[in-house]
Image 1 (cartoon, rainbow, N blue to C red):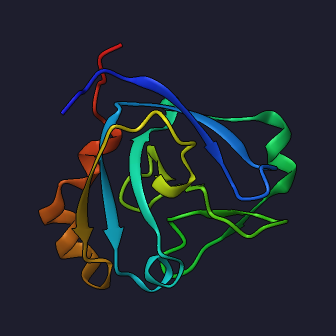
Image 2 (image 1 turned 90 degrees about the vertical axis):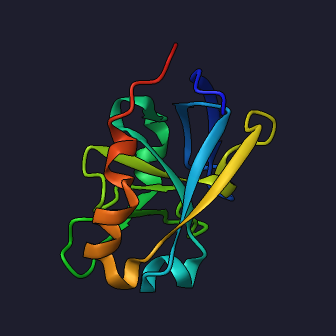
Length: 139
């Protein structure tokens, strides 16, 4: 897989939420079966927080939902309801970016991995997901 970071852009359905993210054109996405992710069909990739930039104008349209441990911060657009990114429990130093919200044209390859959110602790240990917000990408 290509590990050289490039700039991707994306956002929500109504485009009031817009962001840019530095990530390779070939990524690993996580399909989670926890109650929240499975209901909204969340498939996301994780990047270090410093590689994600939310447009300043978008902040007024964001709202946040938490549940369980209240560690994950599920952000979504107040207008269209789409979660285009969130702050995952697995990676408190990172951002989970919804792969379907990335603008077309910059992703070359997407590898899907399962995350067993119904058995969060064991899946967290076995999956290695925590390392995805710590990866140093080539510029």
